[in-house]
Image (tube, rainbow, N blue to C red):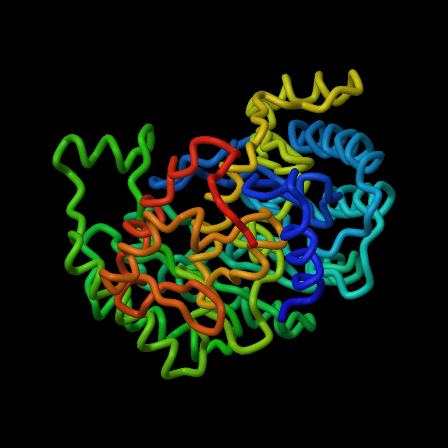
Length: 417
């Protein structure tokens, strides 16, 4: 039994106020994770819709100063040591060594990091050198995530990447020589004119490089991107759903044969090398977020920072959190999120943990969704956990969307006795 679950279940049975009422005990918890957005890129990829800019060094200097101010504002609320920190982008390693040093000095000045905290930095191949890698190691970074996407030279040009396959290999080797053992490589499939052979070679190249974690993503054509425009003009030749499904199966089979565990829909790791920061998201746990366009979740509120650099700087320099929008998450919405995000994981969602967190049994609250999905062979109960079946992994989004809007009120007609 999960720690402390049994005791809470006993309390719920004898407490008439909580009987049948959805709650979220983590809405009062102080986040112990931080996401930091560094928006700068050398160029914008054809598929990207993230908050990214191509900017001169003075603009980067101004951003680093503004980010330090937001760290100061957040640090006043972050009363618990950080267990995970993730620098994403953009390309964090596009910052100079001096700028990176300033960012990490501000981080350590404003936050307490727990012993053994996971600190991840995203990097594009070709944007790291010995000086930057040594600085990152000294600053406490212990995980790097390289955006390789593919090892096929033609496809790298097609999607607008600036690096070639040899640059990926050199960057990984340089990181390994600098002492980084916890490395991730991002791969993409479903790219224009991509073949199964292309995908197979990229996966095998990753295995040959000896990295312990792989993230493999379908291409999603987002509105407003060059790919969206080219698709609408009939200029983008995409593989199609059937071939994409075959690509996904190939990735799963190749990595499983190489000893990787498929622990999340798009993520594979050697045992013990799972991404701890991303597990916070998939467990629907709270986290701080800093930087332009960053999304956070703290004290029952999801928030998004402004996307414009000058507006962001004006907010933090005035001592204000740079929010563009904030949304109070109801207990019902949070319960749905716990199911949808948790089902992305091979471990699934623990019935006992759900009861301890939300105050009701998920198998009763979501009976109208869970039971039909179990009958269809898409979900299964194993060891007190609700999990995707093997046949459901390629169509996982079909499962997740069934839970959206299921619970429209926080009051659920249940008897937890």
